[in-house]
Image (cartoon, rainbow, N blue to C red):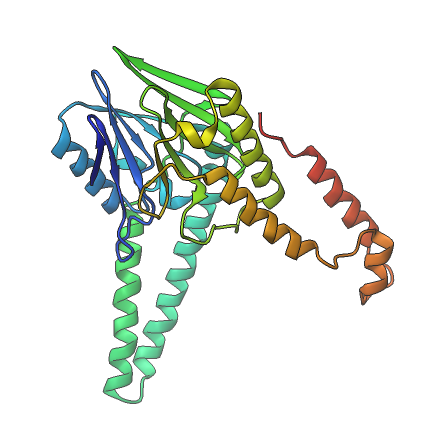
Length: 311
């Protein structure tokens, strides 16, 4: 736990722990705001204990930066809190996280059945013990997962939301696509402190599994222009920045550096890539002459155009 200023804290994760992503704590006049809740209910309980070590004020607000499990699976611990996130983040939890959990549990159960059969057929005691070790690990995993209740944000925003208590003011801002489509940040304008979730990776490789790199670059551009229009130059106003995984850093030129990194990835991806469908077809080996390649390309192009741009 790191105290940044009076009433503002960051819980910085350890690589060997099961929390995975950093969390933020802001103590308001009557209550507490928590930004992201770690990867497991156990880590969420540790986060709540950390809050209790600071204050006995109730946690009234939990903000999820986006829908990835390492930012939301501790939500269930904060039973009396309003869970806040973007509309897209809520949809991501319900449409992606919940089905993924059910699939993972099903796969683990089938693995257990096979391992138990293998243990029975093991030809020596050493091999049987290896199977039993794997069985215990999967049983523990299932036990932990049985305690997990997927809790999606139920207070949603498409642009911004402000929490005001006494002299305290917390801005929650939807910026657009980051490593998922619905990325929010928590911004303390009077303290010039930002919690940015996975929009920024400092000294770490960004997670692009669910990312649209081109839209992520647009989000960086939008963030810089938004701050420039509403405050002052981004690199001058952010004193403390809390990115994914990395220890907090002062005055990081995060939008500039992030944009530059993604631009390099885009450049490498598109280097030598066919510019037209006709050029692509010349390089492809189509196993079936009736393959609807044009239809697939047209559908992909239409989906790209319909994607929501950062507001």
